[in-house]
Length: 175
Image 1 (cartoon, rainbow, N blue to C red):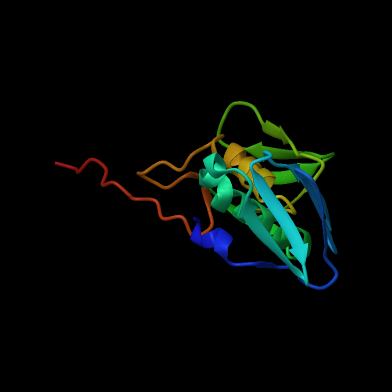
Image 2: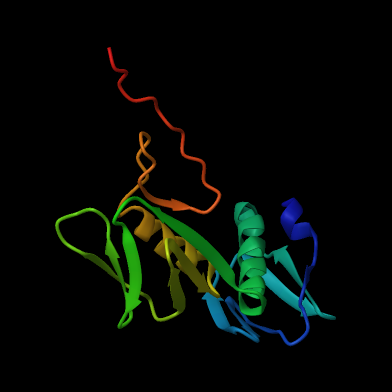
């Protein structure tokens, strides 16, 4: 059995977790999330905690995964998730306009990315901050933006995550 699923998941104050068979919804101060799980796992809400247990033995490999999904849902509606991207390079800019992230990344044309409705994106000089209640949508959008111009190893130009270390290569040496 999963070590993650053995421990009860504590429900913070101002948070409501409802379970209807395989459908789990979580409401909190920042929003609401819901998810449908496979029927092999059972969720029990008791005394301010949620226990994740097996209903069928063949579903044991999903037990820890579903417990982590539920923890992320509870954390998302209470604290939210944030990813920061750093845009590095001369002439590289980013700005939010009309629900789109507009960027100049050294191409011959500006690049624009549609911002999903459940996310908030803010830009400040060379930092793009993506926040939302769903860990999956925040991480997915951040990776989509980073894939537009990955950091290159010689000068480090491109879009990288905050705290990401880019291994630098030595360029050509003069004779």
